[in-house]
Image (tube, rainbow, N blue to C red):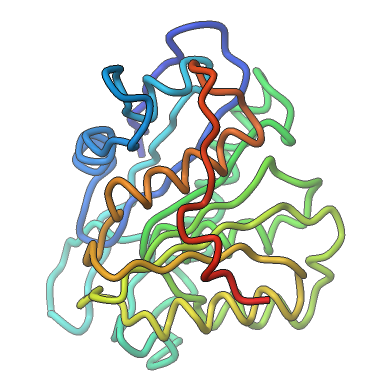
Length: 252
């Protein structure tokens, strides 16, 4: 499947591979994602491509798969599943599509490695996109990425099992997870379970939660947090210091 690619505006220093959610598309997600703005710098462009002109953004496209629960032959999804609220239900529906999607994302990673090394590639996703991204990371077991960013997501059974049968601490990558309390698609409890599962096996996982934002990115606080995370691997265009706005809420 073709990816939507946004080339760097200056020299290519890093790549972010970002997976969209279920029943969305790479083009739709990237367009809406890049409308979100950080709070700083005032009076200047504040979208992520503005702030990080040397980053290449790659948005892979999920395949069209049958959705068993809805009896729909073609839905854009990384893998089929019975329930987003309870991702442990009917796990047999998930694995075949997930394995194919893992292979697809690893091909994208290897293509990007022709330009930049693995430690300059950040793997991210929203909702089912990050469920696939974390599964890819654990299944690959290769040297560390620059980081992992997950929004409004959960851990699928396949990835949970990998956490307990592999050594994810080897070459581990920093992880940032965020979830909105009013998310009416993926309950925040699912995000907390993802956080806790990764912490047990991978160590420190940064977590942010917001009162509002729904099944999307809180703005501007959530964009500021993403900017703070990305600025650890790639400097921003402006001499602006971004901090996690809700750092005081970070669990110990």
